[in-house]
Figure 1 (cartoon, rainbow, N blue to C red):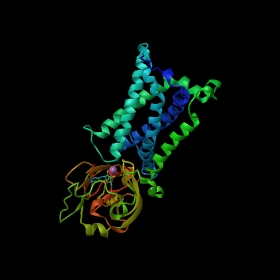
Figure 2 (figure 1 turned 30 degrees about the vertical axis):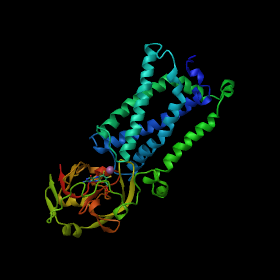
Figure 3 (figure 1 turned 90 degrees about the vertical axis):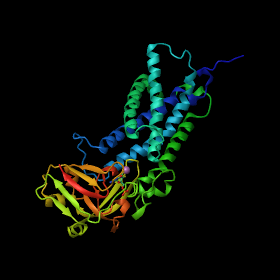
Figure 4 (figure 1 turned 90 degrees about the horizontal axis):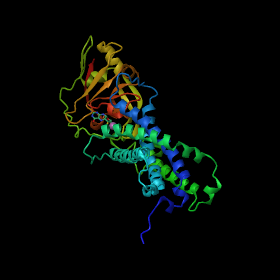
Length: 372
Ligand SMILES: Nc1nc2c(c(=O)[nH]1)N[C@H]1C(S)=C(S)[C@@H](COP(=O)(O)O)O[C@H]1N2
Ligand SMILES: [Mo]
């Protein structure tokens, strides 16, 4: 005899509406946080003109990006638990009851497939592993809209169930079988907590020793700072007659040797490198204020700058700097890091370091500042 499986075969309360709703509420919160912080991160990689991102507070981007990456990782146990809770619905027959029902299930499919895609590609990205044939940034960004859109539709469809889940349990809930719902939800939350605790140390140094699952540690690297792309990987060619030039829309173009730079007034800033991949690290930088250099060259106050590197291979060789950042007294063309001459892999002879910016915009091996 062939017995048909139906959702009725799954009597455990861990597969019921209440459990699914609670996990759904948590996922709704974590998807909202990762969506918003992801948009911030995406636009900051190449800031459009309308985006007025300040240079203060210094650690704002560090915080939003930490939330995005660590929050995204901690979402994985929630998502797996939610999928397990609702998987009996795969045996629901008929598969679709009406056009509206087909549409509803279509959105659920998009939501599940899209969420898994986001979590898996995000995980690969922070592990610096790109086995997929598409460009991570574009794919992760566009899928975010699909997932969040499908999530909003799903929440609207399931709203009544969520409301019921917030009411005190009924006699019917209590009569169901299986392990306790509270125990299960606590275990899922604990799994999320463990993921967060074992990764957050890549951006929050006091917990660095717990960061066993994190791909980077804040103090591991030359001069106690991690390196994403080394000078060799970027094929940096250092000319014997190195000059830092300030050119473009300036009254007095500059061409400064390292000796000239060292003779200018030196300042020290404590600023983090905050990589989009989720790690960040505090460091102490010493060098010339970008603002001083531009005053020396005679640039307009509303000028935008393009900072260019000596590297000859790969992306991220230039970055744009708007007035809030180049006028901030903390912003330096750094010559020294943590008390030593800048290591070649950290951008020797000179690198940009500015507050509240993604690491990718902290251009290393700077040779040209073009005022636009
Ligand atoms: N010229 C250049 N600058 C660069 C990069 C690069 O590839 N080329 N990588 C950026 C990225 S993604 C980060 S996170 C920081 C890392 O700085 P660090 O290697 O000194 O820690 O440098 C940034 N500056
Ligand atoms: Mo980065």
